[in-house]
Amino acid sequence: MEKKKWIDISQPLTNEMAVWPGDTPFSFQLSYTKEQTGSVNIGQITTSVHSGTHIDAPFHFDHEGKKVHELDIDLYIGTARVIDVTGYESVGRAELEPFGIEGVPRLLLRTMTDRDLTVFPEKYTVLREDVGPYLKEKGVRLLGIDTPSVDPVDSKKMLAHHSLHENDVFILENIVLEKVEPGNYELIALPLAIEGADGSPVRAVIRPI
Ligand SMILES: Nc1ccccc1C(=O)C[C@H](N)C(=O)O
Ligand SMILES: [Zn+2]
Ligand SMILES: [Zn+2]
Image 1 (cartoon, rainbow, N blue to C red):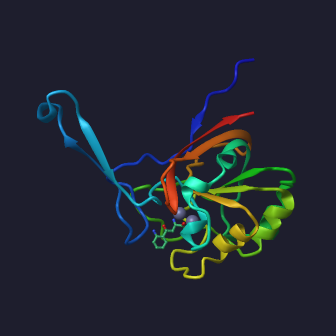
Image 2: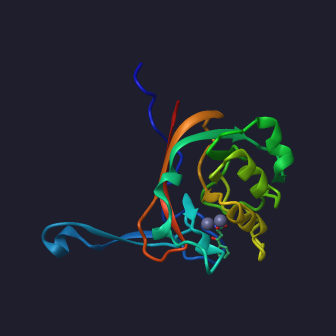
Image 3: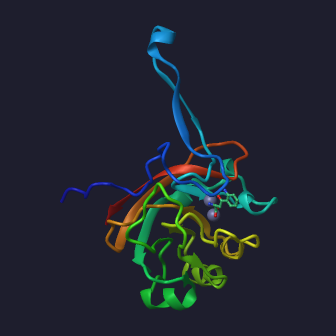
């Protein structure tokens, strides 16, 4: 049987998209038009590396942590499980246990079903500090979530980020899972090769297996 189609789980990068409060907005514009160059249109982008669907490098929250160009690309390609945890204020070991995620290398959490991408969400599901040890125990290496962060918007301690990092679990944020059924998929969500960066936008896609 022919393989199923790839599903785009990335936020479109638009000049209207909401980004983290106070952070650099995303903007695309033509810096040179075909009339100006006599040959081609040339675009430019300005953005925080945390705009839209992106990965965090550990350097984002740890001076000693790996930067984007040092990340293992195998983390971002391979099998993944989507589970539905909508309706929780926070998610930790207790909420994940019923799903039986033993041996799942990449776990994608659906926490919401209707998100307006032009407005920064007032409230979103966050992860608790016991999540890192639990995911490590189960063999999870990448945690993806459909929220702007695994920690609350006003967090300074970044407890969920550190809990994941201390347990070698890498972070993918702002994926779009509204129309995605829970189940097993292949995932590709490769960061750009940005030297020295603390994060990178990704084009994240999944295909049922
Ligand atoms: N831009 C920021 C400015 C200040 C504090 C956090 C951010 C974040 O982007 C958080 C991010 N999305 C994260 O959880 O990794
Ligand atoms: Zn981030
Ligand atoms: Zn983050």
